Image (cartoon, rainbow, N blue to C red; front, side):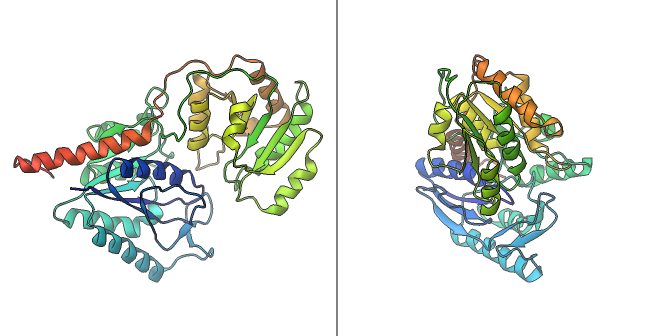
Length: 393
């Protein structure tokens, strides 16, 4: 039997969720599964889905970082008719594939804006015969909620519907219970996979004290202030003159990029994100970046000395939590958002360049391959239980 896997993924703002899910999908396909990658967000250019089938749902995103309003690809708030069409499309893919495994990325630990289709999908899974294995795929940190009832709903959904929760983390760095207080309630379903890296981790990295400073800010929607601060910090840094590359993400409007370039002094080059970004990381003296999941995993894999400028607001705390875990273990220098200014950033860059690099720490970064193994072994175990007449839920 060729296992059929339906992987649902929805990015609402940044594209990091898509890249992590795509890495898991590729490993499932490499292990022999037939994978349908069901994308609910705006199409992502250059997304590597080798060996997988891509299905695009009517695209949606969040209007802003408050995650209160879902809008379509034209920026219009979605209505009941749109929701009905999208739900029907999702259920149509489920019925056509008849998957042995359904994976939901982030849900039920987030993506509440998509309840209108995820609820019916959960019901379809429960009604199917044979019932598919239902798996949640979640990053290391669950966003902080203001009310205990939100965590309670998440735990109950896992207990009612899900067979496995793949936590794409290493508990030696970030234990899941640090951000999900009811982890003990779903402990029998939790499986740590390790962090999902697309780069082979290095055991050691030579110091490059004369290298460049590479400044990046992810997709760019919320990184402009960090880039502005870095441009000012370059003029204040006590280190010997060196190139500073300030890389703007694809979502930052061109007129804003041009404005940044006008602020840049000698030795500072403002550019769009570059295809050779990983090579730049390998050769730089220090990376200055936000603290998103994929960014941090890249830094850990390449053992790049780093200054992190985590994004945070009244709702989004995930980057700040992750950055603090790294700082506590000496894996990065962190300048928190409430104290970020050019002088502090310049001092942090100088401190990292003069340091001894990232300390030795063995972290599991093979999360994509482990995810595929865990899912397919669980599916095989269920088939064996069914053959023996046991309970397969």
